[in-house]
Length: 122
Image (cartoon, rainbow, N blue to C red):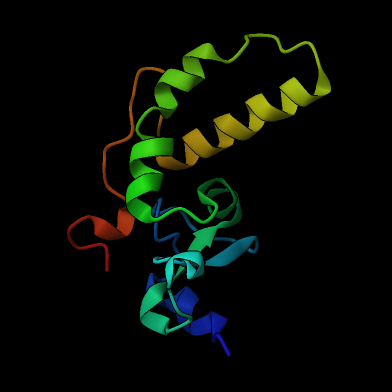
């Protein structure tokens, strides 16, 4: 059984991927996804913001960084300024929330590292 409090405490209540405070809406993520052979061992589990976990899906951290985060600033530029459908509005808001979690803007690309990979994050 996963001890959520121990996972939460690993990074002092911060998202392992963004460094942002977790709040009440957080999830446990597998560094190596179970679909890729990862286990529920505590060394493979990290606390993350729910929206980040949803966006990452079952990708490895390397693919998450190179496929989804590396080009996110360019995808932001392509979002419609005034979406015409409710679905478009939701999609734009979702993308902006993910980008904000990582400090990504149209002019500021992803830095290349997840928060827990940066020196001194642990």
